[in-house]
Image (cartoon, rainbow, N blue to C red; front, side):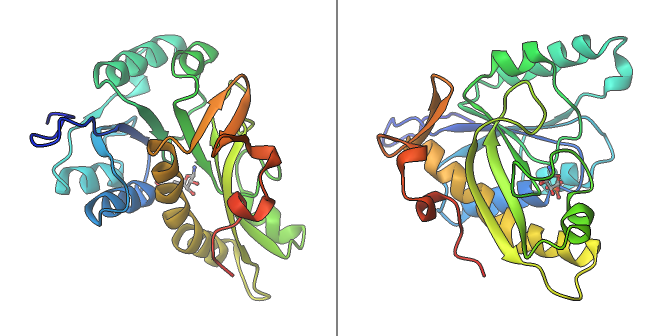
Length: 230
Ligand code: GRF
């Protein structure tokens, strides 16, 4: 599919979405595009697992999709190089990690610097890594949520673009909390951040996030740090 519409000749931002699992964030991005809330197209979906349910979501939506499994490569760097080559061939404006469960090498991250973003199910910098919902519950956190951030070589450590949170309920289990963070935060947050990125409102330059012509850290906190969720 061409990234230029027939009538306007205007470039439609191209997303490459990289997944490993269920693909609920991918699904939300697809729906936002279909609803006209996100002016972008998904040029390619890549999974590192052939059996990822998200691949079925991509196929049903008629998207180009490809699977690159790490088992076919001797070294991690070889897999990352193959992944990077396939992504680059799709000419992405944004590389969207959506539940991609592998740590990427520094060379990969640097190749897509400032266009590589990830969603993490915690209010970073709290709970980098796995089991975020369990950890939020066992610490007795009153609120928990998700963060979208630019990816830098350190795991879950790149600058945050935007966060969304919900109140933790007294009877939440890791499962119910994970489900509510996914449906009430992640599936709203990721398309909303992508819409800001493709509109050029937010970008990463000189190691910092810029928002609406200002350093994000100088913007009023509530402009970017909360979705309208309670
Ligand atoms: C999400 O919780 C995301 O934050 C994390 O992995 C999970 C992916 O879920 N990085 P899905 O594949 O989008 O359903």
